[in-house]
Image 1: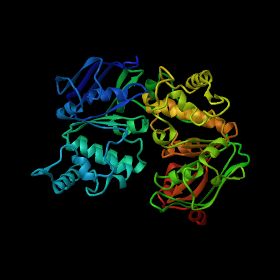
Image 2 (image 1 turned 90 degrees about the vertical axis):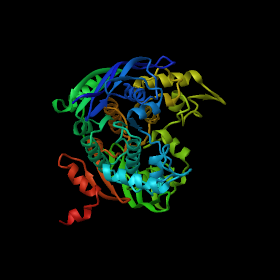
Image 3 (image 1 turned 180 degrees about the vertical axis):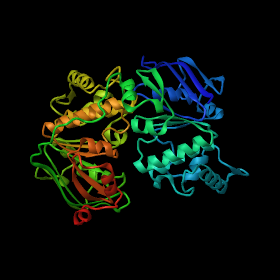
Image 4 (image 1 turned 90 degrees about the horizontal axis):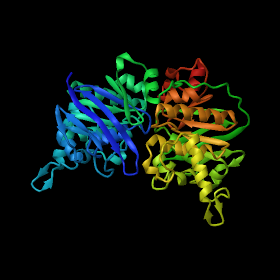
Length: 511
């Protein structure tokens, strides 16, 4: 294999003094899937922004197909055959799939856009690359997995031969991830080269040919995937041995903290997303909800936290009817909530890091005196949280938008854990977070359980649910179809049958 890309001694220093890249070297071979890994803030996304022309390097050289290139913007990168699919999709929701794919380079019929031709182009791309989408569907009405396919088809339409995929599976279900991987293998067979950024070690081992590891803005090494393992990769990423499995003692559950009975909740389209669901979470236990995303988990959590009205049923928290309380009253009642989407529900990106850490407590006597904020108290609290939760930034005064995704997640976790909750709702707590931060967040969740907190965990990562939970409720089509005591006899395959609706607990018990 010949080298298609070489990035030599890349440095990127921002005006505020942050050095995101400190002499990174990356060599990618033609026709390979090359994984780029590292902790949050290791410099992966910045390096790829440099490659796509979104950022200008402070120092360093880029060679593409043996030629030294200078990229003054994404148009330059696209013209060279370099395409990027961003972690947060850049699609127009009100446009159709076909309109999004040809956007910026629409086929014309005279002076008008040729919509029929756009549909034909999309169908040809779908047939050639096996990325199944309906050209006429509106993007706002399709699944996350299909949006991912639209982004890739858009890049292919632009003529890309080297594809950069930034955290492509962060919001995908396991089934959508498998479909994506099959499509990527097809692309490689057709002569494409892929740079794949991910935190998920299992995915790295499954999909990549080689791996480059970054740590603290510099290259640690490049490995052949077939000659390494998850332990070595995690050690290079973090700089120490990482515990990939969770150590926890047997739970000692006490009184019921959260009780849900016959709950019915509608989605935004007025359809029943949660259908007659019942469950209980006790103090001192982690109740994990396993299930393919889109089976009512989001609506369930929104109902518990006051963000969505219920149609019928009851939600009781410490013997109080939670449905009669406002969001503020629920939070004041010591209910912690790590939301599934940190950008829209978990944080304010324009507010400072320290403001985000006291987002729901700025009116409390701890941080205010009359109408005034106790600035020194807020600063002391922020420094304490940054140290305790390893939030990496030069200043707590920087806006939330300055943080990497994983560090912003740590801000949300720090805020919710520090309020001493009696009930902790953790929805996708480690989504888009690196292996070191995952280890830390898992330990903190178990610590809360051991302190007597009732924890309701929702995760699309079945491994995470099985590692952390004391009991597992499997959710399918808005119902809890099984509640399983998590012990050594439980397998992913067994839970998978429930998740796919192939089995219900009552049926299993009859046999």
